[in-house]
Image (cartoon, rainbow, N blue to C red; front, top):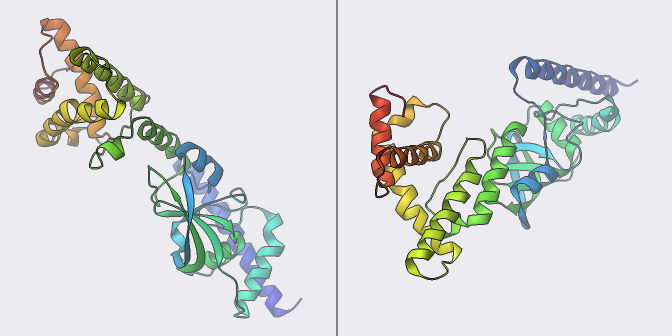
Length: 286
């Protein structure tokens, strides 16, 4: 075996050992170190496109998944399977010889990338300490952009948000709106709120209300006033990991409770929000 082959074999063993340590750390920390499967992301987030974006230098740290090799490498693109050895070492030897390697092919989703072709080139580049890699990029349209922090455990929640935006088109009707829930079933409840609001709008107007009109009015007349009360109060700091939307849902539950207790159907959501905040600050159960 040549000296180059020895170096290449040693590099692969080192990469596999680090991948093993990453797996142990993942088990201890409870934080997944798996690559994301592109097909799962495409299905859950209802991706559109792709659109060709040309040749670019891409940060390797932003490549978080693969189309068909997501089981062969971990989140840091270290090899997790022995059957990748021959191809990995061949690419690694080319790196030692300073040979030209063609650009990899990537899908872009938000701020992150998925490998279509070139998984081993990405793996060797990361193992060698490179920061960037040349890539031909095809960008997929998404209503829910992804960041480097995305993991498999967040996909379900992001998928629910993508479905909510697809059903309501809130991001088109009110582009400035940022509605994001961490509560299980939270987006389904928001859709229900909008449907009920649309129903009563129709009764009042004596006509069928278009969905876009109902969504816009719900946001302007219900959601936004409550959100403003929550944001002004600073009460969100008492609920780490929760969002304004989560507290909006709690406020609407509180509104229902107050209307039943007081028999006041005219009580407005912003007043219920003020009572909700005041109750929390007084230390009572809302």
